[in-house]
Amino acid sequence: MAKWYEKAVKAADFLKKSIEEQLGFLPNPEVALILGTCFGEAVNFSEEKAIISYNEIPEYTVSTVNGHSGKLICCKIGEVWCYVMQGRTHYYEGYETDEVVLPIRVFSLLGVKNLIVTNAAGGINTSYKVGDFVAISDHLSFFAPSPIRGVNEEYFGLRFPSMDNAYDTELREKALNCASETNITMHIGVYAYMRGPQFETPAEIKALRILGGDLAGMSTVPEVIAARHCGIKVAGFSCVTNMAAGVTEKAVSHEDVSDTENQVKEIFAPFIEKFIQMI
Image (cartoon, rainbow, N blue to C red):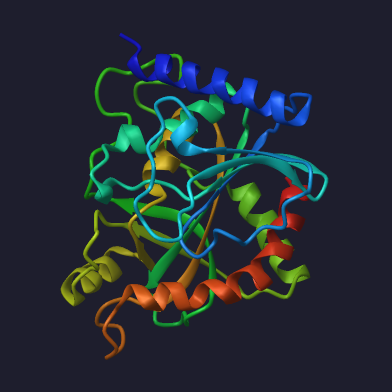
């Protein structure tokens, strides 16, 4: 039974109808962008846009986290039509991972070829500082069920998809060039996915560092797995909003994440616009 394919078709059909009604025509974006925590306003949207709340879209889940407004926007960023998710849902909110990644499967049916994911993350790598950006090169994912667990739906992809080059090397090279041209310091690092919602303990962060993790966060990886299952290329970017537990003497808090949000838009918006033009 192709449960998630049927749900994705239902949502995709709704979105196509709603977007065409709002714009008067139906664009065919090949780029989708997920704006995670502290990235919600980090894009300059075109005036010509269609906006649909997640709670209107059949089968979609709705975020319960501050800073995730829960809107899908179809618009131009620069000269490129894109789908933009303002906010996401998370495993720690009580959703299953296959529910969390339904939008990715919908994007695959809508013709998306490239996915850009963003998130706020805790810095494990001691060479990072708060406010730095990191292009994700790989991830560690041991702590939540895979979103493609269960009966494989071949409409989306293979039973055993490869996670080699999960974060596309060519896209990352383009991103690094764009970062240089827009005067952004962009590190390269490995993102360690944790279930949350509690922040990691100092011992967990120490273990993740030994395993090769540079960043810790509670999102993104399920979406990347689903995207690669669907054959969509991925570029991922983190903003270091705090240093992870035990890296400094300061206790980790969600306020650290919120405090970084205002500076992100000013820095990130020119970069992401330039990057999308190059994809």
